[in-house]
Image (cartoon, rainbow, N blue to C red; front, side, top):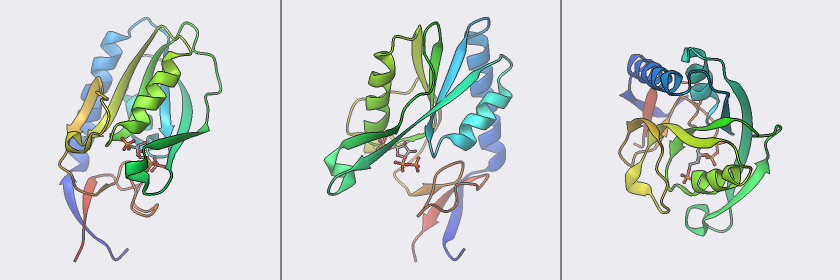
Length: 174
Ligand code: PRP
């Protein structure tokens, strides 16, 4: 681990905010059938904490998507590499993501999920980088809005490393 990482959001602040989000969701969906859909890989740490902090029972499922094409950010193509395992009939879906950046991943996945006719679809993200948005995509629940910095931790990686950091850090280039 030779990369220099500066703390942007402390572990305590992340956990406190996720508890607040979990409380909001628990209150809203009390008595309903809720399915959390995590978008792999980045969502797993946030989704685990969110589900465990919610006071109502939830089911979980996962999807995966990857950007592709020349210059992935500008190409705007998103490929589904893992689809859902179960029906969405009678479910209130909450899509769970670590970050919304250009918005392309969530925009596509939300459309695909809505086509399967669940009772409702909302989006919860831990981090939002609004300055990077390329397509319209607003999350219903946002942990933190952050500046356009390269962040790691809580599922976010740098070359597949640092997903397991318990704080949100910024990679500092020397
Ligand atoms: C990251 C992140 C989101 C997406 C956000 O996933 O987890 O899914 O990018 O970017 P967007 O708003 O510009 O679409 P990534 O493809 O890096 O895969 P990972 O979750 O496995 O790290």
